[in-house]
Image (tube, rainbow over all chains, first blue to last red; front, top):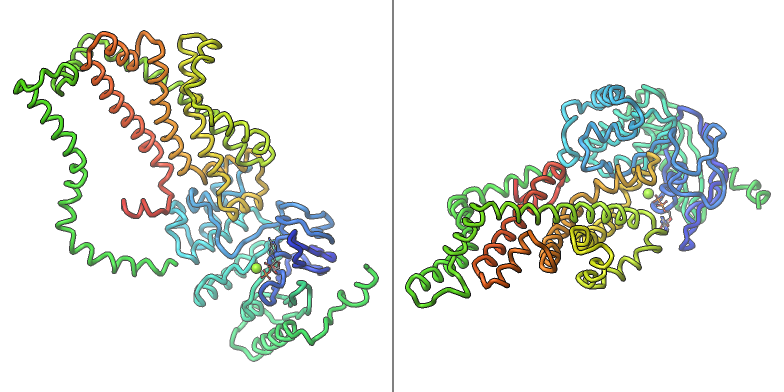
Length: 261
Length: 281
Ligand SMILES: Nc1ncnc2c1ncn2[C@@H]1O[C@H](COP(=O)(O)OP(=O)(O)O)[C@@H](O)[C@H]1O
Ligand SMILES: [Mg+2]
């Protein structure tokens, strides 16, 4: 289980990007984090990834504190961030340097097959389309078999068609080993298609505003009335999160806050 | 981004139709640069041949070539070239190793940079030839002091090139290294050095150029063989053709070794997605 306990982050320039964000995320759960721009979504993800230290509060994975990048936690960014000097295959195998070469090659080959890029194994990253490059990034993050995979708006730079394709593909890959997925998005459709639970954040300072369980079986039909219902409730919550006149309502921001101080 | 590709192909089509004149100019244009020196050389040859000048101080090209041929026949040429190449090679190797190591350390660890970069910059401000007397005192008049001088000349551009390039590596790529828990020498080896390779090759070429400059200085100061010795010998014995012969050989070797670096590095830079490559393709 991944536990976030009152995680706060104040940047050196004084911006309070995240305030007492708490959540408990079960192993294998798919979480979507949604919220207005600048409400601390990336900050939260970077804290979970151990890339940035939280100013206060704690991130723990299976009761192990996370303060720096961890082997069990992978991250995918908005840009593929492939290493341009490595072939596609070597990019995917980047996190497997400790394994014997034969084992590494085998895992990479399987991953390439799995993301449908077997024919691109020896291509350079510059020869890939945006969607293909992001697939490679997903394969690179998944091949060391992390328990938690963080995704920061991974599909937002892609066209609508490619985005849908990759969303389905991500679910497909997730089913292999069922890691915990925490996906930041600003696309309500994406959140409802993928997530078991949607966390809505509100800005200044970034904090948890609402949680919506998506009780829908998979595969999900994007055109079903039920799907539309969930989308509407996420949208409503999102609108309210941006409306300053609406008070915080999440319990963790209520009385507990006073006690903690 | 990628959907631009077909558009690019379309726009390149009108350029293709104008290929006929451009193909011609592709062969002609590099030749243009040779025209002036060639005309000057032929002109001077003619002037001497017509007897308008005796060509004693400025020998005609034919006499320079004859000198080179003479040196080659006696085996002298190979001996001098070998001596000079050996010095440049060794000095270059030491300079590159030290420059790369210190450059990488300074680029990666800010504490190290604060500690020794100011000193290195101060040393760099000293004209390198000022070291010569000291090196001779310390290391003797023979090979060691020469190689040390060349290594010093090579060190600075490589050091600066590596450090500067590492400091400007894309933070996003470095973060990928962090997420895979790389740090220290693993980060340098697997992320930083490959990322700076294109800039590194440039600094190697600059360093090599300085290596050639300093080998001349080192050999002018005192040597019994080497191309620099040929220069000095030519001056003392009043043989301008020999001086020019040595200069020509310096030019050829300098260009050749530079080309070797370029060609040797090319396979490692095939991944580059740069403006210069697109033109070559
Ligand atoms: N490195 C940084 N230094 C200072 N302020 C930052 C930094 N990164 C983000 N911020 C600020 O923190 C807030 C939250 O940023 P971020 O987590 O990137 O938001 P989101 O990903 O939800 O759009 C913003 O106000 C942003 O300006
Ligand atoms: Mg963001």
